[in-house]
Length: 256
Length: 256
DNA sequence: ATCCGTCATTCTTTCGAAAATAATCTCTTG
DNA sequence: CAAGAGATTATTTTCGAAAGAATGACGGAT
Image (cartoon, rainbow over all chains, first blue to last red; front, side, top):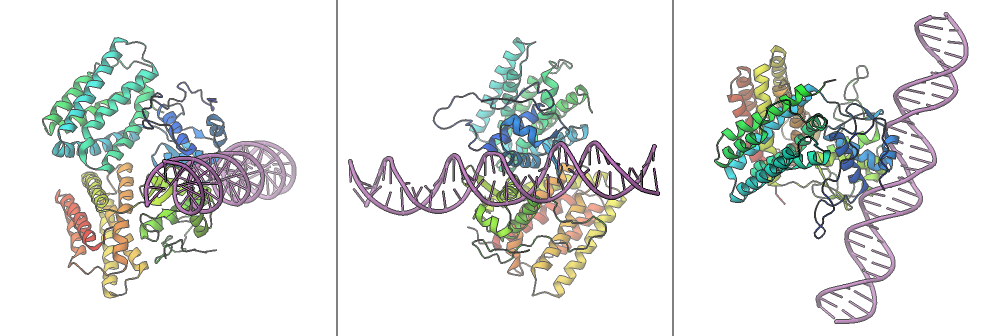
């Protein structure tokens, strides 16, 4: 059922979609997409974020059709959506291409993300209740456990571990801002998160990124503590956290 | 070539797309869309914003097909895009519908817009040059002229005038933030602007909105002056401006 | 009457062939 | 040898028929 034809560039990561396994309690969970268009969207998105579809390269319909075993319609729909999310570019009658990466773009995404998330964090701190605090602590703990395991098995950082780590990380950051009360802000944060992933993931898969003696856990701890005591410091730490990451990615990527 | 079938509800505004006439200097300008999908997107968007496609109502493909004289593919692509922009909702195998309007939504859009535009204004004030200032003054002047004309011909506020006014208004606000240096922020502002239009336009077309003795021009003047002297007041006035508008729309709409 | 299947109907989604357009190549001609 | 017209190929875009899913209606059993 999975015939992933390698589409021009050799996909060193393959299709990393469908992170969650097949556990399903009732009819709930990260269920598989009901429609082929949705599936196309998810797989394309995952492949772009993971770098399996190289930035800047054109996306030929025929190639995609073979790669994913789908017809034009669902593919075009997915590409249309991805275009709105800035992961794909398209020119009128000349088709689609993977949106290119650039220093400038990364800077813009990072700063916009800081703007959005700091505001969301501020509102969450203003209105957050006990459950909100609890979910932050929980997410932090889960993240710590994963990081612990990771550092013990250091050396062979596999793609699967990477993804697990990445998910915990995302969940922690989302927990922080979850109580902001604005669906729009949360959606924006998610979207910007995906875009930053494009920059972080590929630069981490190969090397173990031990270039800088950075204690990410400590930074998270700091953000959480400040958040729980509802201090405006939290937003400062958060901004710093994101800027530092961007800085490291910046120097570790071979820009085009 | 134009057979606009009225699709269930009687479109009292018809398709208000293609604001700019047919002037075209070289090959430039607000040219017509190169592809049917793009055309579908623009017309659907215009019709939703103007209220010609009623909020909450389902969008049956067959009806759209007749209304716009297009086939499924371009329509679905357009709807997919509009979904990403929150103008259209869709459920897996149950098709599309016009995104509903709600007090809560409007509040959220307004506040998010304030967040984005105030930041963009701040950055513009920090980095703006002489050309930037000049374009603001120009946009303000054009807006004033239009408002002048409008108030003289008061009483019969036609849809065309409404649109012209709306455009000048938008151009003024865009000029303020144009020099922020972040494409993303500008795009977000545009998107949020479209969403707020949905709330303002329908509530203005029928009545002349003389419910409140509001001097909008004065507010614009105030914002511009503060901006030109690079005062932080500008962002406060801007926020107030948007909140006041939201307030007025709120009381003048018969919420569902 | 209420609940549960079954069937018909309506609507969405998908497919791949056909049309339209861009890109590339060939063959002139100045 | 460059430049341009014309033909050829590659690719995107559009179409409408066909497949697939949801909704509603009907009828029988509880």
